[in-house]
Length: 167
Image: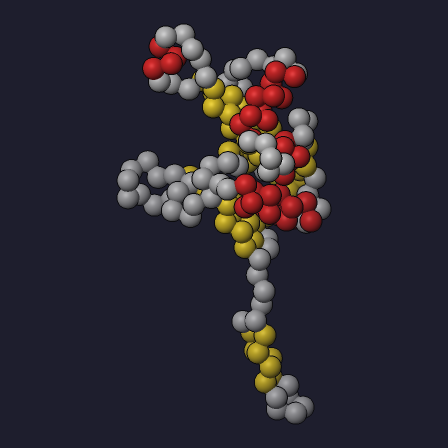
């Protein structure tokens, strides 16, 4: 909020500044936020009552592009011990920042789909370029398809390996 005083007529006008802010994920856990100027990425605390750690603070004006991709990680558990392997898919942002090291993070952590769609659309409206080799943004926007199932389909259709690396 800010106040403007008009010296000519003595009037005072109070303005409320409208600040857009999106919180993507659960605020008490790992999540990311976007406001008018910044993206902030927080990691989950290692101890139960630990504070969230700010991993990245990125000015929107400094973003050259955002690559969206997925990684596949083998899941643990009893199924893997008997030879039935399953994989966890993470959808990632790799944000290329002017004159800085890239910021890479999982965009699905604690997120609901509507928050994610809103955040991506906001960034697109800020004229940020997305590099999306496998059309993951379209998959995220398609509420009739589970993201996990869509990634599985991409892997099969493109004959991609299930490995722990950027796909």
